[in-house]
Image (cartoon, rainbow, N blue to C red; front, side, top):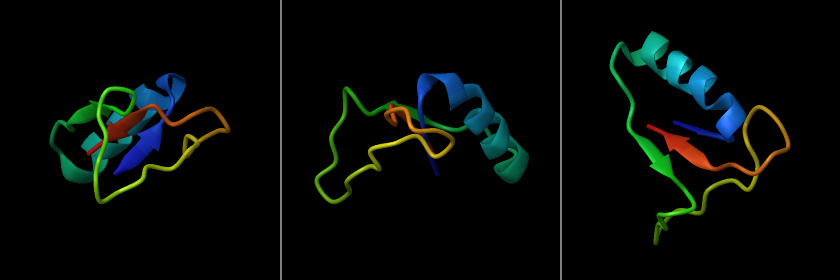
Length: 55
């Protein structure tokens, strides 16, 4: 699972595919909320806001 900004989305997809050999689901965190999980505020690669969840 990766939480990334738009700039690092492609890298996160590549990392997911390398690890699981399957296409990930991509969730836009600006359009979805979770009741039991609070996403990190920042991208895992930089200090930009985390916008996409790659699972």
